[in-house]
Image (tube, rainbow, N blue to C red):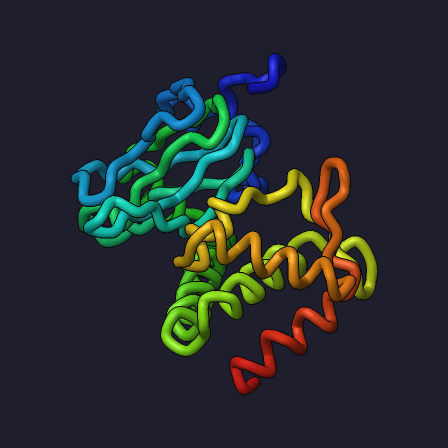
Length: 232
C-alpha cells in the first residue's frame, strides 16, 4: 500500500460530483480499515449491507465452486466501489471480495448510500451504468462458457484485457503481466490450457511476453479469432 494513502474519499470516482463539504460529511459516516493481501473483506451470503470504497490498493470480486475452485468476477483498483447490490436490494451478498494487495477500504452504511443516490441523480446514474456494465459482462461470460471451448475462452479473456489496455490502434500492453491462474479462473479452465494458448498465440506473433508486460501485437487478429468461434 502506498505510504501517502489517506483516510478520505477524494479519489472515489463515484463521488466526483459532490462538493468538498459533502464529501467530508460522508467521510464522517465511513469506517476506514486496512486489509492485508489475500485477506477477505466481505463474504458471499453475509447479511451486511454497507457499500465499500477502495481508497488504496486492489481488490478482487470472486465466487467459489462447490469444489472450492475460485472464479474471478472482477478486479477493482483504487477509486472503485463495491457492495452496492446488497445495499440496493437488501439481499445477502452475491459474491466474496478479497484484498489483492495491502489496501485501505472505507465502508459506508446502507442508509447513507441510499440517501446519496436519492439526493444526487448524477451519482445514481453512475451506479446504474456500473450495474449495466456488470449485466453486459455477465451475459457475455455466460455465452462464452456455454458456447466456447476452453482455449477459445482464454482467447476471449485476453481480448477483454487487451481492449481495456489499448496502447495504439491495434496494439495493447497489459501490465502487470496477468498470471496464468488469474486467466484460468476467469475463463473457467486450467493453467495448463492458458499456457498452451499463450504459447500458440506467441508462435503466431499475436502476443509477446516482455519484461514487465504482455503485449498484444494484433488486437484485430485476436478479435477475429474470437468472433469466428462465437459466430459474431
